[in-house]
Length: 500
Ligand code: BES
Ligand code: MN
Ligand code: ZN
Image (cartoon, rainbow, N blue to C red):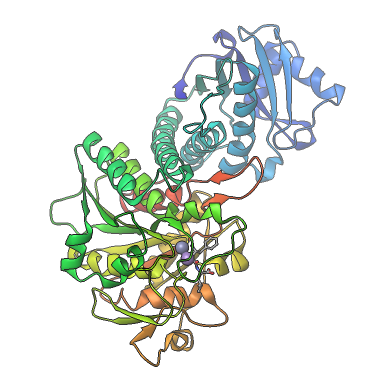
């Protein structure tokens, strides 16, 4: 959908629907009071009827409102005045957008609320409303023979704002919102594709396609042969049980000064995780096509960087493989040697994510990173700890970890830190190799991060476990979320001093 900012006076704008905000206890935003006057009290009359109060997302549509050129006037509830901010606006508005898209409005306009005062709020609100609206409008129909688009889709949303300075902020917010939404869409599309289509090779080809689209983005992919030469014995051991060749996708976005140290993002790209010889139970196993969501979010974030033309260097690494049972597959007890030279006893072949990540994390050293963030659907234990709302966050550098958490907080894509420490590291001891790939009972998310930490000692590192947040299960809602593309992009925007 298109988004744009206009200075046009509300009464002069011809469109399918003009949207104005009201708050709980029937309080009107300052901008809505002006509309009430223009319409000879249509808003207050509607309020008196009791049909609408102002709870977040409540809607009442008036047709042919007097004094306006718009065909409809939508009163949109935005919740409590005191709690109103960019999140409440995005909640309410994305709901309205979904409704208008379904009901046949083509062009709508929001009278931008006066209640958002601070510059940062105005900027953040424009951005959030695009991200959330696009999230709601997203459909995945690539594999359906009959597509089912809305009859008259919403094509454009205008933000009406008389103040020139605020218009600049809104434009910046819309632009960032659209770039992030595009990265989210790419991530969701890749993630929703099934394992038989989205293979490691397919992931690599799609990343390369992005590389051809953006000047500053260069994409290559290492083959198994090349990985063998590098000694990536852990990664390759996972791929051995699969007929699909593994890939290590390398995306280099050069927007910063030549030679300035890049942020390296590493994403788990397990295109299907059956568990290997430690086979998973069959219920809901289809959802393990989502085990490449970390990788997809890295690809989506690099796309957002390129769209925004960010003045920073960013490298994306996506180790991609399948994990299947087979005569050549890893067996419990097998010992493999990683690129770092650390030997690993594979006590459970279903703890494969860390095996492909560890070699990619070692490979990351060659970029002399300013910071490394890896993203992975790594542990079911993370869902036990944090559910489906918040991603797990761990790392070896307090400053970096706090920076990641703050970025997530400010763009409503949250992550929560879990502890690490020697007592957890001890759980990885092996009688036969340098370390085991599982940490036994308890603290599964932490011991997985401890495993990765053995390979990240040479740089500042943070780890996001997105097992609970990368997709939604079951029912109509089932599908990839595109998280944590917003968090990662916000992190990079902050490093460029371009965040709200
Ligand atoms: N991809 C899974 C983790 C996962 C499970 C993500 C369910 C989302 C939902 C990962 O490869 C895995 O199987 N982890 C094991 C680790 C265990 C064997 C130590 C797990 O979490 O059970
Ligand atoms: Mn697994
Ligand atoms: Zn996995």
